[in-house]
Image 1 (cartoon, rainbow, N blue to C red):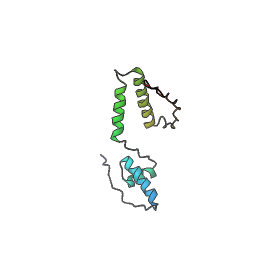
Image 2: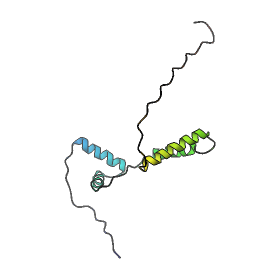
Image 3: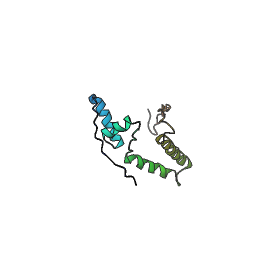
Image 4: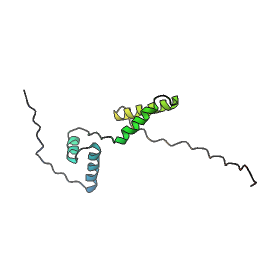
Length: 119
């Protein structure tokens, strides 16, 4: 039986960065829930660390999931299911995040008429 050794890394590589670059690496590592050293190690060895999704993401998914069930209107169910499908495809790499579309201009609301009195 062969034992797999789990040795801690001992060799050091020094890299010079600007403060801004260091902050970017620290932020990216924090999003992935790993140290900056582990983040750089994974990136250097052709691995892309995955970001850890915040708890709020899962809460929103659960709320959307509830909208796909009865007694909501069919169009609400379909819209919620479409959002969940898009999220799944983006997270699994089957789709990319779409560019934001400009909302169509809404017509100006008509001024309300007074019921009593004159203008």
